[in-house]
Amino acid sequence: MTPRSVPLIAAVTANEQAVVELAARQLAAALSEAAGESWTCSCNFTPTLNRLVGTTAGSVVVTSLLPSLEALDRPWPEVEQELHDTYNALGETGDTVMICTILRHIDAAEDAERTARLRRRIRQLNLLATELSRRYGALVIDIDRVLSDIGGRRLETDFRLGGPVAAEHAARTMALCIAANALDAFASVKIQDKARAILDAHRPAGAFGTEQMMTDLMALGQGRRKQRVSTLTDTVQENHVGWLVRQVLKRQIGGREAFGKLAGAIRRRGARESAALLVTGVSRMLRTAEAGRR
Image 1 (spheres, one colour):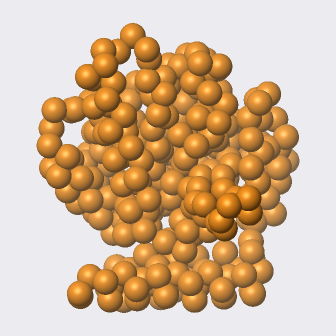
Image 2 (tube, one colour):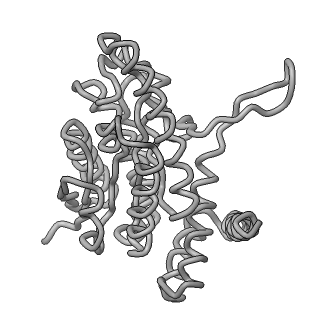
């Protein structure tokens, strides 16, 4: 029997290629166990982000912001505009596009001036990831949030994600995010849920479970009642819904395909939560459009 397959195509750095390959093996093993049949996750890599455009059909697209960190002397407006243009083009394909954020830890061996510039650029890129998600429907794999809470020193790594310990944690985070958000075209909801549970059960020691992988944090309340809460998981899904509606209105995605994606969400979340997500996503899209006219 021919194995079922989830093709991954990625534009990442050399260290991150090892992370993607490990995540693919973990995901394939979890899907095989969940389905009781053989699954594979093939990996193809492209050297630059813009080379992905036009080559992603039928694949889960994994992208990294780390290559944009290499040109540290390049003016930020140019970097920002190029990323907007590329993710806009990738969003038009209808394939699931995922963005990996950058771990904020920087090796102490870096000189002070370069360290300051790296930190600023990493903050800019990680913040931009949420904007790219909102504008173009990309889904965020928040490597920074998960690994930062474990600690760069404990992981024996920095923003480059070198070393086997960091690779294991980053790969499990990536595999879980793909299983949670990107498999509607490949696997039934039952298999997806089982695969997520398997990945969650076998996460590395010290790693967060799926419910603990908080990404975007905000302060809620005041004084002693102030709490830090997570918002990005729902926000990213709302962004994706808003993007989906925009694509239908622009006739980039057919109504049947959009309905299929919505039906998958209803199967996963239930009709009530899916309806609320749809209303919130459309409202977010309308607020964005209104702000753009001001």
